[in-house]
Length: 145
Image (tube, rainbow, N blue to C red; front, side):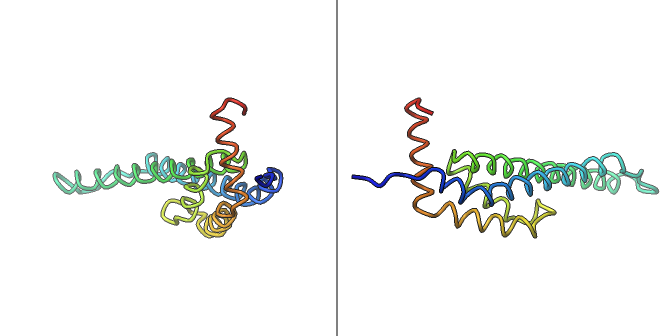
């Protein structure tokens, strides 16, 4: 006979870090998008550069904008993972969101992301929380959720 799974207790355990990851992911995405927009709008004309130097500068600026947009997507993925974690859905995505929130390269909010990511991982690695995620995945596969 298996022990009954307490969905409410699992939800209470993951709610704090999930909200933190959601907020940090949104902030990181918005800051990255703002940086990309400012970079695109605020590009100054190259004064005195010609030929290969001007091309290299333009390629560098374009690459910087692409990187910032990728960072913004990483923030959005972390935020979506936080939402998934709140709903006790998709353990792997929730786990990935915790990891993403701890990566400082994309996130200007890395000081906040690190503790929320660690807290989220600690909660996700608890056996009762894992069991709730498994139970909900099984129910979803069976069409009961």
